[in-house]
Amino acid sequence: MKAKLGMSPIAWWNDDLVELSDDVSLEECLRQSRSAGFTGMEKGRRFPDDPAIMLPILKAADVTLCGGWFSGTLVDEELAANKDRIAPMIDLFKAVNAPCIVYGEVGRSIQGRRELPLAQKPKLTDDEMNAYARKVTAFGEWCADQGMPLSYHHHMAAVVETEPELDAFMAASGEGIPLLLDAGHLAFAGGDVLRAIDNHHARINHVHVKDIRRAVVDGLDRSHQSFLDAVALGAFTVPGDGSLDFGAIVQRFADRGYEGWFVVEAEQDPVANPPLRMAQVGYAELVRVMNAAGYSVETQGFPKD
Image (cartoon, rainbow, N blue to C red; front, side):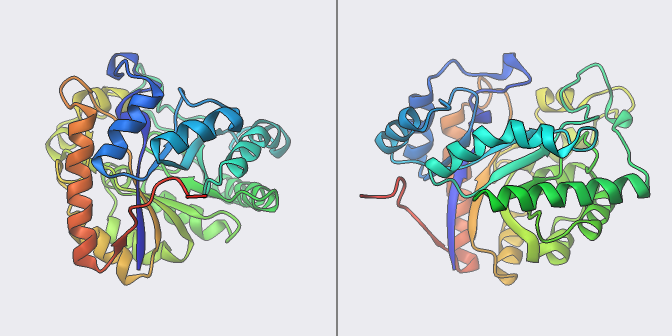
């Protein structure tokens, strides 16, 4: 079985917490992640939107674009508005041969609002969840028809956060919307990562190997502290530096036949946790558990001519 290892630039630049950003260029970010061993990088705010500019940068760094976040609003807005906003991203991702676009629901979400505690996360009724899941499925089908699959990202402080919410969303949605399984977000929400893999492996097309610091997560006062407070306190980190058993998690993916991208997405203070060092820790741990699970980790970055 084959696996590809990528990173998210959120370890270097945090879009929601400017104070958790390192003042490095896109080229330096790519250089550091590639030097640690990663062959892919998800899109971040310092990436150009013109493929004619992006492709030479990726090629020079020997890194491929392995995904990127789209802020969806389907819980409140119509398909047409989201189609209009994602269309340029689809064109870009097709031009650089990215595997998928990550759909993150920001409608009603409090993930970017530091003044609102975790306990005030939005919740959908059963009827609302069913209608939402059908709409997201239709959107995923449309994007696939345009030549770019989506990957749905369940997320803390959003409408699909907990394991029961994820199960309900998956039951009401269809194969037209694949799933991004994020170990850290699911564990933060109190879910069972291994059970979620077992339940939903047939539709998982992208994986975020985010780790958590259990002491930080368990010590949160969710009636007063927000998602961004948790990030600032160090709730997340890379595999090998946190509390999750990625040996067991990766083995379960292998048992279920998953092949593809495993992306380290670990937002934290780059001063206390230098991104290059954390990338090295995360890569070493992932290679260790990948080898144990029988994966062959690809080492080629940007496709050769």
